[in-house]
Amino acid sequence: MRVTRLYVDAALEPGARLRLPDAAATHLVRVLRAREGDACVLFNGDGGDYAARIDETGRREVVVEVGVRTDIDNESPLRIELLQGIARGEKMDLVLQKATELGIAAVRPVSSERSEERLDALRAEKRLAHWRQVVVSACEQSGRARIPQVSPLANLASALSDLPADALRLTLVLDGAQSLSQLEPACHIVLAAGPEGGWSPRDREQLAVAGFIGLRFGPRVLRTETAGIAAIAALQACWGDLR
Image (cartoon, rainbow, N blue to C red; front, side, top):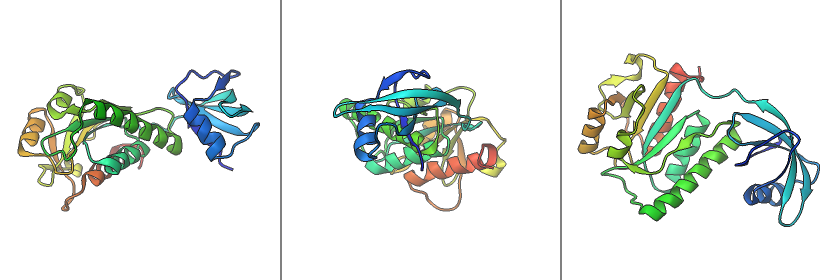
C-alpha cells in the first residue's frame, strides 16, 4: 500500500513528537481514514523525507512520531525558472502543477499588457498563497523534497529587473530566431511564457532589451497553459534529467 506523503512547515527531528497542522491532519484522518499506528511520510523542503507514524488522533489534533530521515536526490541538474504570464483560474494551477512535476526550480508570475486577469493587491496576495499550495501539493505527489519558489506577482518590467545575471534567457514566440537544437546547452535557464493574449510588441521589446532570445518552438500556436510545460519538458529531455 502506498504511504501518504505530507508537507509540514516545521522543523523535523527523528524521535520527536509533532502535532500536524490542521489541514494535514484533516486530510490524513478524515479524507484518507488513517488511524493510530498507520505510517506516513513527512517532508519540510529540506531535501529529505522523514518516516513517521500516527501516535494519537483526536477531534482537533493528530500527533505523529517522527522517524528516520532519508535524503531525496531527485532534483534536476538543470535549473529552470519560469517567467509565466498569469492565466485565469485552473490554467495557472495546471502550469504550476505540471512545471513542478517536471522539475522547475522557481516560478515568477508576471502581469503584462495582454494579461486577461488583473489582480489588486489583496487578490494577488490570496492567489500567491493558493499558487504556493498548488506547488506544495505537486511536490507531495511527485516525490520532490525541495519546494520550488513562487515569487509574488510583479509587472513584467519589475520581474525583468530582478533576474539572475548568469542564466540563459529564452522567450517562446512563434517567429523566434532560434530553435532548441541551435542553442548551446546551459545549466541555468529563465524561460518566459506569455499570458493568454500572448506577449505584446512592447512586452517583446522589453524582453529583447533584457537579453531574451526568441525561441521558436514548433509551427503551431500553443496556449499559455501548454507552452511553458512543453518547453520545460523539452529542455529537461535535452539538457536535464529526462534523457
